[in-house]
Image (cartoon, rainbow over all chains, first blue to last red; front, side):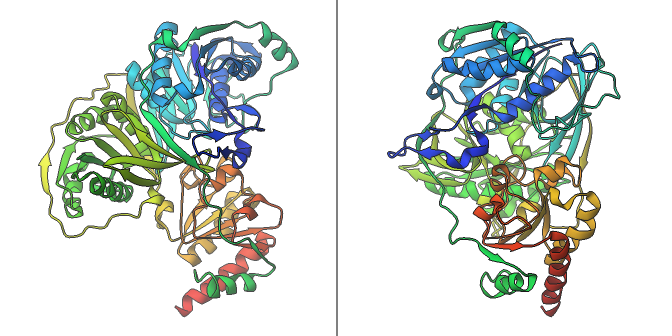
Length: 278
Length: 324
């Protein structure tokens, strides 16, 4: 099975409250924050690795190809994915300012058409833009079926068709889908038995984890030698940008500071007399 | 002048309340552009739902009955066709809207403003405010394509109520969105609850991993939820641990809520959780750890062991409610 996984770098999402806005309100600045792999992409990458390995024998059985769209140093984030186990990478050189979800979807569609993977597995959103758009637009451009917010994926060793459970606001839905197809992941995709691929024994359980696997030292060394192909954005016939950000602002802080209380009586009293919510 | 098409979200032959927030946004847009808005009821039960949507002041209500499970590919061609005369397609940014709108946008060659919390205009041109970076930045964006697709954050737009209008209801011809044999929806399980919906409740009581088990959610937290007549929520950690179902998750990737009162029980307050609840009017934290980051957004912080405090609070709240 061959899986294409787009990975984006974002300002450290666990410190998103330290992001600033420039004095003229024209841009968001994340100076001082580390670049991290978008956590939603990281989950999808880990899921893709689980789909293409025999975990019991620690053996790769398929291929994971990473795609990043961004400036040259975005390749660092891709190296992290290669160190986790992906086979190779494609860097589409561009300025962050050239991109929106539609541009990204159009470029990924072009790459998917060239690479002909069985699956494109994306994060459902990026932790900076929080748009939730690129994966779905991509599926429509490719004319491929899409399963958003996958929480469980079962396939066999052929990897051509998948039974997928996905999360909705109102419950869950289970779908049978034939590849090539597009997936995005939910928060639960990395539960210990969320993925079954007909290669890893069905009774195998991954350790509980909120993110992707750590790269081993061997993996990090190997990643330096893995091929990364470079393409220019303009060679991939990107769509025109369709959004224009006029300004950015920090949200108003919450008024007043926290009042610590020691007893339930005190709390209930304040909710009645001060906050008047009870 | 720009006309607006609202895509209503249906469940069991009625419009979900998410639709009424989308209608509220559409009214603001129509006012700003001097255009009109139409409502499209699409899916199973559209015929029945369309009748109930007549009273919201729409120019017309279109109905497109499509049998069977919802699937975005099945609906998108019809929505795109219905949008032919419209400048903006709007729906709630629920999991339904997020799954559906980008497909419609790709069909229309349109840009998407997703999860917007505000609308403004300049000379009839629509500008949208949307939270980014887990709610730590607000961007103001305009969409430059001929058509625009907009997802509306439910908690930011107070649901429209019917105001006695009587819109004409018209059948809209379904455009075939045949999936061939590539997709088969095997089941759709809808969670049923007697409690108010998370995104609509005036009070939300949420629990975190500190509750330690599904049994404790049921025996310790739920009595407090019901004493308030509240909706129940949870942190991602509690959902991941299997204590409660995914539909209760509040946060950047769960539901975004803005009730009058939000009670966070045993929730430390990761950035991703704060993104889903910090617009609440009054926030109460119950936590042993005074240093927990939830203190950054809380109005009141009860420093206590939740297993002592929650049963005591349940009694106190029940007593107050009993007095009326």
